[in-house]
Length: 409
Ligand code: SF4
Ligand code: SF4
Image (cartoon, rainbow, N blue to C red; front, side, top):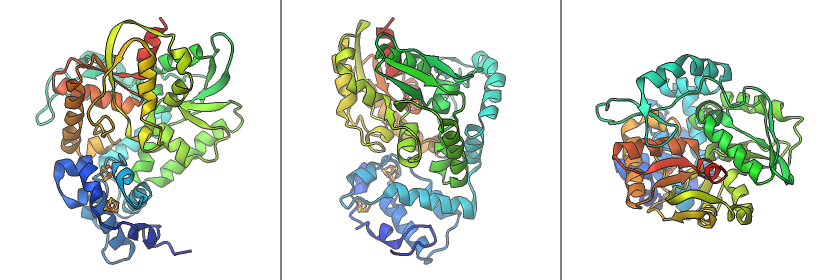
């Protein structure tokens, strides 16, 4: 077996790239910057040089490794199937050790990896957020009342004063029980979108699943993993695995694309299989076909990167689900699978590039003439809601659980 070098990966992995440049056509970051280090080819070249010891890693090169939303569009189009995610995470892990993490990444990891801290911040900031922000057109989101220079309207994530999983909870299935599932709520549902968490449970109960929400669960570790802080990621993973050790369920469900991607790929030791909500909805098309939205509604769909490329879930699943719903009309969006620009802490570290990607997504959404854009990732919901506000669109951004729960009222 070939020896692993400086980045902890083999030269073979890096030399697989044939420098064809196909990734330039699809990279959302390159599309904004038009600079070679923004695209996979440029980063792989730099990683290869560092791995072979031909170039010494410095802050500038580390910065290029971070100039990426990890949307995986490059990996999908690559004719030789370069394992881009492995390369970029290894490069970032080395960079984190050698030159350290940026202050915004450090702060995000500190907050998300400490459940008690996140809950305390929620308790302290919730009244202030309510006082100093206003409602967005997309329900459940708050905006600063003034526009910021260069950025325009800014959406403020609301940390709820009480987490969704404040204690162990069991929600029994409606009617005959099809199975028992563990809802991996992750930090976005536990601490930010608690109403969407409730709606996800309602939907699963209506489909015949008893839902268990354990208190003993933590952030999946994605913020640390994608930043290259693999030590913190391992600690988060261990805590979750310990919490789930004696849990007997048919499967675990996530309604966040990134949690699903990370659990499926990095948590092979879990004692149960993992399913993304959209997979369960697709398995229950017949039942969902009986559901009716209270009024006529035109909707479109945004494909989260970590569902279609991270987990390789077919793009047809959400479309089929939306098409069977009564009173709901589905209209397709141009480049529905392009990144929304969030990319975890990418939005914090590269606000201007992230904004350009976000605005493109918002314009494509607005062009559909839909009343709402749906998706299955709280991060995407939040970022698209902000983009739509920035272009003064009438379209609302919603999680699919919020739409489905309305059909059950
Ligand atoms: S598409 Fe693949 S092989 Fe081609 S330049 Fe990009 S990473 Fe390299
Ligand atoms: S993961 Fe996305 S943003 Fe990063 S290099 Fe590939 S296409 Fe570009």
